[in-house]
Length: 240
Image (cartoon, rainbow, N blue to C red; front, top):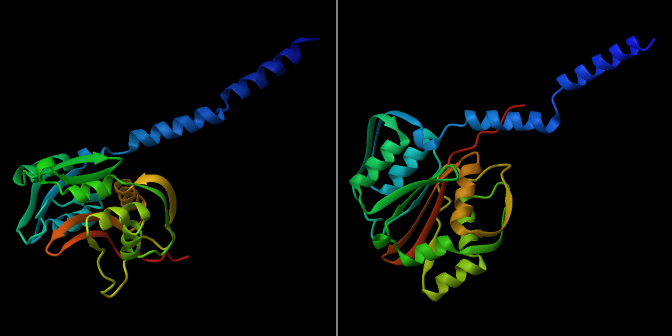
């Protein structure tokens, strides 16, 4: 009399055991995503050849050409017109960056949170730029359709960064709104952050924005003025 019931219970237990448990299934998916994620430093590149009159123009072009988020801190006096070149027949992003800083020994590079940062070595860093990048902003909001110019202005008008500029008697320049379109960080892209360094906010924007891919900061020596610019491509609206 009890055998049929025992068989039914056994079947139910087998079915339950074969079903994926929510947390385990989710963890398995996340592990798969992590494994499929390519290490940015090992990104393969071929036939790279770019030339520009400034390091800012060169790395901005490279960033857009290969869809690589790049943050650039320009060395003291490094905003003067100079011939810059990137050339790599075949290799990795790490190979290219190492070659670049070998040719320009005032710079170093690192990849942090999937963003390439190119920055001056200590003896070539501008102290005001360094202080600005390291400054924590207590509260910052980016609204959808914000232009790259307004984004830079809002960052440098925060109470924390404004105090540094005023103490050093420095103004700022975040670019202009000219051209056939106004660069924006995204039609739908927005965020709110608290207690985040200026550099981290910039990195967040170029990593997450659908169109912004690089930022540049420097202290122009004549006249002394902080230049901060985020560069973005035109965002095409998705057809329904």
